[in-house]
Amino acid sequence: MSVTLDSDGSAMTGSRADVDLFTYVYRPTDVPYESPRPYLHPLRTRGGAVVSAYRPWDHVWHKGLAWSLPHVGPWNFWGGPNYVRAEGGYVDLDNDGSMEHDQFTAVGPCGFVEELSWRTPPTGERGEVPGDVVVREERAVQVVLPDDERDAWVLTFASEMTNVSAGPLDIGSPTTNGRENAGYGGLFWRGPRSFTGGRVLLPGDGGTGVVADAEDARGLRAEWLGFVGRHDGAAPGPQGGWRSSTVLMVDPGTNPGGTPQWFVRSEPFACVCPAPFFSEEVPFGPGETLRFSYAVVVADGGSDGARGAELAELGRQVLAGEGDVLEPGHVDPAAQPASVGRP
Image (cartoon, rainbow, N blue to C red):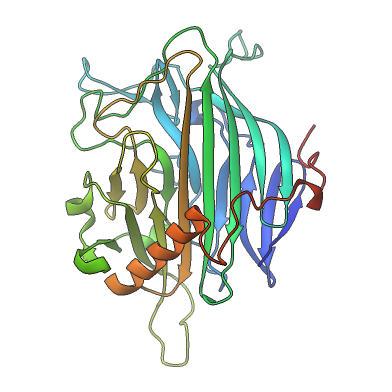
């Protein structure tokens, strides 16, 4: 089932049945300190509930769902300060780089393929001199709306990164730099403020899932992890109560670093990140290419362990292109001009 993609030259919105499922901002206007990079916000369920947050006051560099890496060699593509082992805390190093949209090479009824350049911080008295390009990336974002699962949809994110600098850009995290159990970095989702205190879903025995506490789950290795949160606002029906949604991320098991450790929090805010660099750096030498892929399942309603496992299986099938769910490479460049989004 396809979506309607509409671009205004700086952001692309994917819609289905009068619901804007996502907006992909590919030309952000963020200040350099927030490490400008493309992000997906708002993300919505098929029922229209927003399941992402943008620039929360506690971490203004958190932007919905975004590929965000705090330690890439000497550079920060996450935003804000860096954790420095020798200082035992966070320090502003003026090393915040940017991920810049170059062009879309394919746009179709189910997603797009994009080329980006990762630059070091700008220089000059007013930051008027662009930084050097150290990474070139090809990124693919695609969407599947299953006919037999009316309450869920799946977004896949794939990144192929090449080190085009003259030196190593090994990728790490605050934990590899000395902060215990804080290995964030990768495909990072920040949930709405109302999701604070939500429940975490993890794989269990026998192919099912289990409900877990976020503090206990942080740092665990798993093929998938989900988050169930509640929304502020109107009652979902005549009986009152509250509205819930589920966001679940799936790792295919083929990414660098192996089965990922997860950075997840429920307090003081909701976030999920499969972190391939959580506790050990991934080497990224000059000329080397790294490839990552993930599925993000967005579903109306709360989920128990059993439904979590079902949603995870849906995400796994989409990533694998199994059955009638998705054929690999389903973006059709001819479906819409690839020049969408170019200057």
